[in-house]
Image (cartoon, rainbow, N blue to C red; front, side):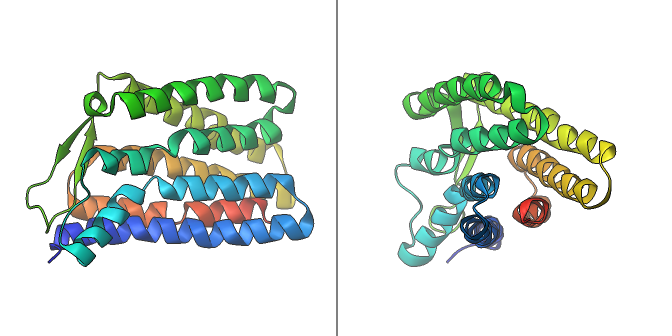
Length: 232
């Protein structure tokens, strides 16, 4: 039987995935209908960001259906973090297109290289990148922590900081420079990316289950803000 902490962990992670899938599909539908390329990229970003919580979601259903956690335990981290590079590239593409279109491909190229390096360390140095805790197998969910001196953690920190500067702050500046509906849309995009960065960082730092639950409920609104900012 899943413990209360495990149920809270897995259900809030599932909520983020469901929110991302719902608004991602809405964005994809509108992008096809309107032939809007940016909305298609936003839809992919929503899917990839939601999948960052795939580890606890899969672990929850494994325990519910089989009474056992993910095995081998390294798969937990791979399920969650293999989506970092695709989400990052989509985010930088959006930011580049809307904020600095002339230099977007240089920036995208840099982050593609960084994303590939991250994926290398994730897949081939998984044991060195994370530590895992599982107090009560078959009841609790796996809890993964970055090794904070390893390149995987340092690169995630760089990615989050870059997203905050280029997207969160960048869209806020564009909102300040705009008026009317455009101002509102840039504000929504700024809120979305600030939520993503802050909630993503706190999720990996906090240990109190209730605090993590609150953070994830807020994170579940990320896709909604993205959708509102790009739906037309």
